[in-house]
Amino acid sequence: MHPAFDDFLIIRDNLRGGNRTTRDRLIPFCMFTDLEVVRVGLNESEARGRGVEYRLPKMPIANVLRTRTVSETRGFMKMWIAADSDRIRGFTGFGVEASELLAAVQTAILGSLPYTTLRDGIFTHPTISEGFGAL
Image (cartoon, rainbow, N blue to C red; front, side):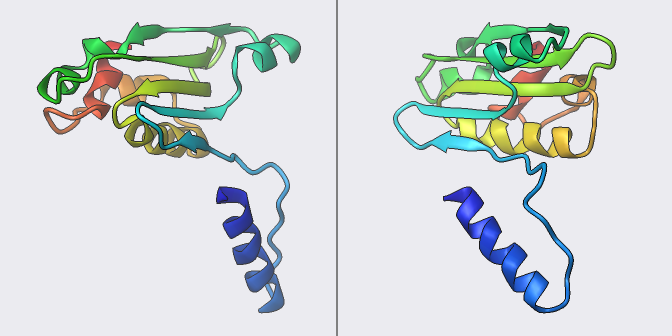
């Protein structure tokens, strides 16, 4: 669904004289189930297949205080981080409000921000996003 809507925007803009393309898009995946499943960028098998050296911080979502306030502590989050630059190469989350995490990570990837930007940011308390500080 996400790529189809973006395809429409690209076609519309190009019909108006733009020069947009579908090449190299960062397409997020989000399944709004109970619990949400999200992913953006590389996953572990893709990173290995491309020979990308990475670090993989991961943690149970229960470490995020917000999950305790909503009594839903099942799940995890993990992030593939380039070993040489701290750039985020991919992210997978499974848990309550994981889509909230996805948007922040996708923005960081698009902006070429290091993961430390999320890790060291001060987020509203209590939110799922403040869990980045524990990664």
